[in-house]
Length: 361
Ligand code: MN
Image 1 (cartoon, rainbow, N blue to C red):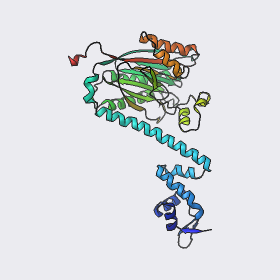
Image 2: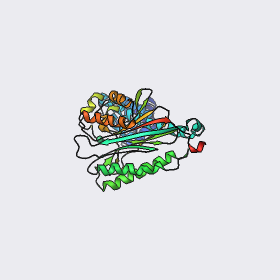
Image 3: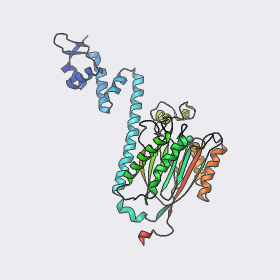
Image 4: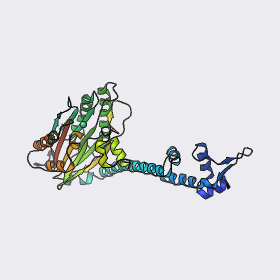
């Protein structure tokens, strides 16, 4: 066997001797031999490949504990782990990207205010128990400024979803200035979380999803946690603007599950994030959407999105007539194909105001 001193080995694998000593302490990369007299570390040439992998994974930003796991795996499994790690990084970065866009948009939004001051919301909401569940644990709300869907779970699910939505209602009357929307939403989420915890009365299985839109006069701010959804219908095309926080979606993102297997996965109902009666339960996604006249938004619980495919949702959502009928049509469709879950929808149109707002006159 060919022995390399720590200096020579460090040079060959492009890690510093200091890093190598740390990795030794962390049991990440042990020297092949330590001289009992001098304490000098020696490495085997065969260890170079592992050391280089460690160096590359460090460059990827992988935490040391995770690197230790990856290095202990056969090549195929290691590849899978790296892929999963990167999918997670990308998902987290996407959420941070939304937040950055939100801030940029917000801080540069004042100048555009005049051009969009003539828009307002029209809305309708409908919720139904469905054909199977003994009670409706969903809560919907639609008002001048606030639209919300919450899907409660657990024994206290109905009070959890109701509490979450109630905690947001102060937003209807809150002072909205350019600088404070983000802080307001943060406060709203905090009080919703608190309210859910109280409603759960110590039962940790109780919780709720929350997907809400706040109208700022020119934009729609989205708060989202769980697997309820928000869609935007623009120019006849349907866009889903939320990402499901479900265990199954995480598995798909990480390449561990094919999308077509999702519907039959035993854990398909499990949420990766929610507002819950238990301890920490994840941070909601925040996004800001520029409002455009003619846009139609849909918020719905999974009782709709699990039962009715996107193509059919687009057809029904794009239908003419009263908004209330559109909302009812979507709920009826979910019930017609089985009504396996509570089903709730909020439908809202961004329309040109029929008369200028008072402040403009
Ligand atoms: Mn549901």
